[in-house]
Length: 114
Image 1 (spheres, rainbow, N blue to C red):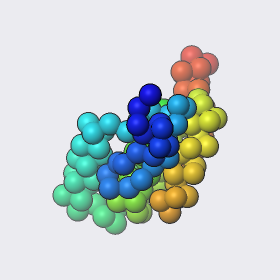
Image 2: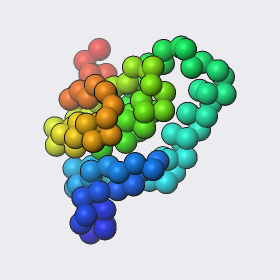
Image 3: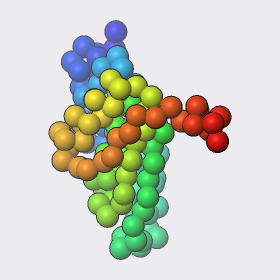
Image 4: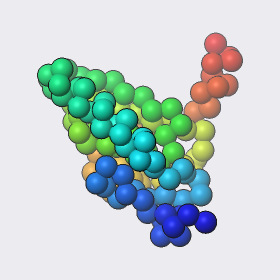
């Protein structure tokens, strides 16, 4: 069992996130991707522009939470099929003091029904 599951917490982009067996453990590669998004947004000097962000398969919510924290005027949502993962994501948003909309949705069934 990964140490993060034992302690129920993982570090990601200098913040603490609750994790459990209903979520994946945030990866360093994902942290690099989030950092690139933040840097690109700031480099293009779009700080007054509202950015709409959707994270599919949000799990612990680390990606949308970090993006909201670093791009505060963005509108951020995360979707997941797992109610338990969404509970963790919501607790992480509260813990890290950001507002992210987390929605239970099976994106693949929605695509097939369209």
